[in-house]
Image: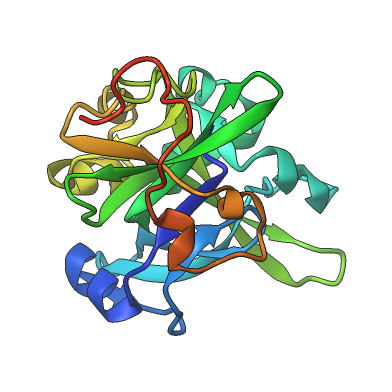
Length: 231
């Protein structure tokens, strides 16, 4: 799964990187983004421009009666995205990109879990494949939410976790955002094959209130894990 990630670049850099028009307010760099918080997404708007917006992480389907379902839908499994009720309609017509420059996974070691940070290249900006939806509460207020798709791990992550977020190549952004190519985009839901690196980080990232650069600083382990974690 993907339950925490990092976006330490400012809005202007994300706008330029994704060639997006912003409808979002500015934000401070984030190092420990958690479910239910506002997150940046890039989506296609009706005017054929890419739009940068802030949505709540944890998808609430338009038909839901209980908004608490968003706590269970921070991720969508690629293998069942077309048949799962919460995700099948957004997958057809409401796909998005979630900008990031790192994400965290935890490796179980006996009774404890060691967090690792994973980056693309040398820490460059990348995009998770995502879905979004709109939900109205009983008072008529619209809440827009999103989820991150996951798949099986690549060789780098396999020693740490049995799932990883779907990371899209920049050349596939337009393909993913178009709404007329459902069968084509299914082929994009695969483990990332580009250059990545991973390293252990402090357990500070375990706590949502810790949201600073120290969360992503490499640390030395007393007992190094089996296997090679650097790609």
